[in-house]
Image 1 (cartoon, helix red, strand yellow):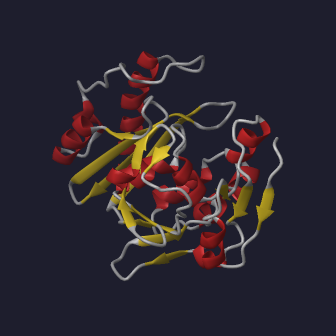
Image 2 (tube, one colour):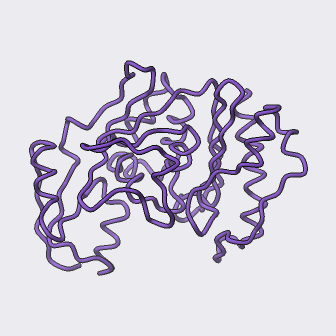
Length: 263
């Protein structure tokens, strides 16, 4: 690990100012960043710790009915809140182990956009809005490829705003060693308009499965997926799962998510 300075700002304003420094980088829970630093794959001069910023911690209901989750809210806090979007709480409860859930934050996970992270599937399937101090970014515009997002350098996720679906569920096939999603599917039904987002499978990161969305919007039933298959071209392939296996799993996990949402 290379040497770096650690700053613990007392306010969001201070954090924004600190991140304007050259080579400064935000630090959320650090589940991805710290191993990256240990492997000397990154060399920021300064880390700006966001975990102490109470201004961006918490869960509430906005005036428009959306569920608003502060960027520094931990997975454990979200997992305990089952009243707003139960499927989102269930997703958070499946992330890593207890230590990861205690430190990791939704803002850090979404900003990192790991191709196997769980939250991107929920954000995209729900059509959520990712909020920074200067703008709101629609989920469909936010995720731009492997570890790539619409965030600019130094831009902090202060909140993620989730429209509330009438029913939703997340089905995850877990990679047992890392507990990341080998394939994870989040299905959200908004009064007959269904969105389906897949994580863990594609070499381009999270994506929507439009054919499944059309079929499920006509009939929200596992049988509606009969005959649908995902093209394995472009799917990830590694020792834990070949591309065609991941493509097959997408169909299996989508069916499970629909069954869970209907239960």
